[in-house]
Structures are given as structure tokens and as C-alpha cells.
Image (cartoon, rainbow, N blue to C red; front, side):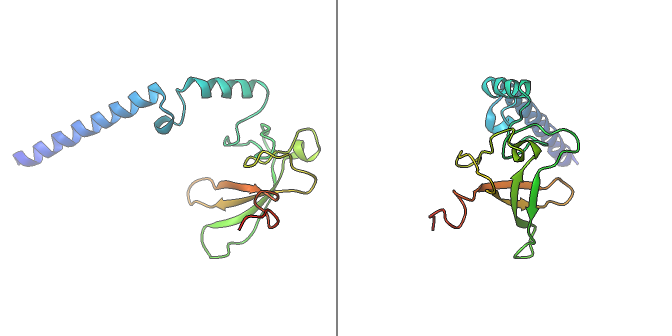
Length: 152
């Protein structure tokens, strides 16, 4: 009985120490552990983008092509293809939102930084996760990732 009580005390102490270390590192703002929440450069950059009506490329409801902050109900023009191997990942093409497709904003590839012309698209992977939102990973545009990109 005494051994079980000692194990329980060690488990409680371990949980308290883990919680203390996690909150300590988050408040200091190490980017690897806290996602950059407390790191001053990133928070200042994020504030200036939100003041201009832009978002950062990973934010929800942000166009991945022009980084425009989308309003409620606005969608990004995209096309998801069926899975080739029966898994939860599939290819996806993204054209952009209403702002960048109308020509109000520059359409930029987030990988190579080139300005996208008329019908050029972003080539992405769509990872569907059960119980959570799907994740989109941008691989590149038709020039840096497409069939004529010169990569082997």
C-alpha cells in the first residue's frame, strides 16, 4: 500500500512540474514550444498585418494566395481531387479568393514568391483529419512545382 502511495505522489509531483514548465516556457515565448505567442517580433508583425486588414498565411479564413483576411461566408476558389491511394490525403488546386481573382490584390506563390499570372494555380496537399479541420499544405505554384518546373 505504501508503494502505491509513493507512486501516486511522484505522479502528482511530475504533473505539477510539467504544468509549471509548460506555462513558464509559454510566458517567455520560445517559438518552438509556444508557437511564437510571446516572442515580441512576431506579435508586433501580426498586429501590423491585422491593422492593414491582412492576415498571416496560416491563419484561419485567410486567402493563401494574397493573404487577404476573408469575411464571414467568403470562400477561396479551390478544387480537391480524389485520393489516389485511398488514404486521407489528396491533391488540391487553389486559384484564390474574390479579391485576388478580380485583380484587386497581387497573387503571390507562398513558396517561391513569384507573382502568379492569369490561370496559374497553387498545387497543394489536403489532409483530412477526423474530428478536426482539414489541413492544407501548399507545395508551390505551377512554375515552381508544376510539370515544366525543371525539377526531377
